[in-house]
Image 1 (cartoon, protein in one colour):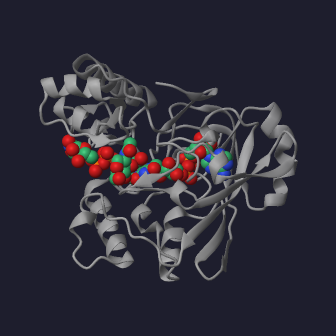
Image 2 (cartoon, rainbow, N blue to C red):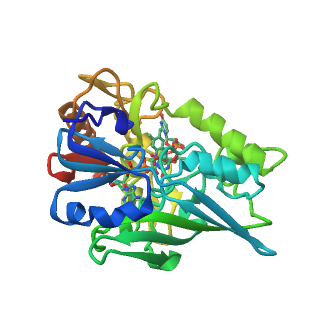
Length: 332
Ligand code: FAD
Ligand code: EPU
């Protein structure tokens, strides 16, 4: 059976029944029978996916390429094939003075996966620039398009995670950015930049991420393992009674978001190990494959963290990464 180890950034030793690479959009219609009647999953760069054990199905890896740019007086309209690398796309836009994506630099993965969990960082989410998402609908065998407002974007969420669409393959994403792009520097440390410019944002985001986050090339990981929890203000007040320093970010009148990294850090997990898996020593929200870790060890450490966070703060952490077991998507 072919190995999935190099196809997901966490790098666990798992296999699939079969792995195929999609280079041409026209080939999707030939895959209809496979996608509808057999266990299959689509993979971009595997940076938000962890294969906990051998996957009893086929994997289709996205290699669709191409970028098309149009412009009018005020905007750039950029249509990008879904298999393009996200970070390369950010650099391409920056090099061509199509600014806005700088805050999202160095996020691993493909352009096609970016709307699925509505990638976000440093005060910006990809939904801010999405015009449409085009996908191949395996049930009807046709290409369909959802406009931004139909995508139900939320924090690390969209219609593409809801299970309410028939089996689909995102083929293209359309973006729109303004020619006089508004720079976003609300999130620390971007708020400390002296002479604000797209290039300074790009450099600062890259430097900050390189300092904080482990590079999957050196240390297997899938970025933040858990989402930052959103809780009621009343609940937050009870947490402040326990820990007056606990930070929060405003969501709306009723809710706040807490940094899960802080909660996990307070419980002493930072740097802790379970077999070959560890809670990263600089960013405790990131679990890492230190040394030939196993899926069982990863799940056990994640459970331990969830249990302690629940006991101390009455908060249920949710995994942000997609965990794949023998039969497909599993929950913690
Ligand atoms: P994959 O992991 O390959 O796939 C993710 C899911 O989407 C899977 O369920 C897959 O089946 C599905 N999928 C992928 N492509 C398609 C397609 N074309 N059609 C249909 N379904 C598809 N995320 C953030 O939001 N912000 C961050 O700051 C961030 N930082 C990260 C840092 C590191 C070091 C790492 C490793 C990850 C980070 N992530 C971050 C998570 C990750 O980069 C994003 O979720 C990214 O969009 C995943 O892209 P991918 O191509 O690797 O997706
Ligand atoms: N913190 C600690 N201890 C630490 C590290 C952080 O207490 O060791 C606390 C601090 O209070 C800090 C706060 O956590 O201010 C937030 O940390 P950070 O700025 O590193 O961001 P994060 O909330 O942990 C989120 C995203 C990241 C994204 C960054 C930057 C989620 C789940 N994660 O992380 O996205 O890059 O903000 O915007 O929302 C990802 O999704 O994979 C990802 C890496």
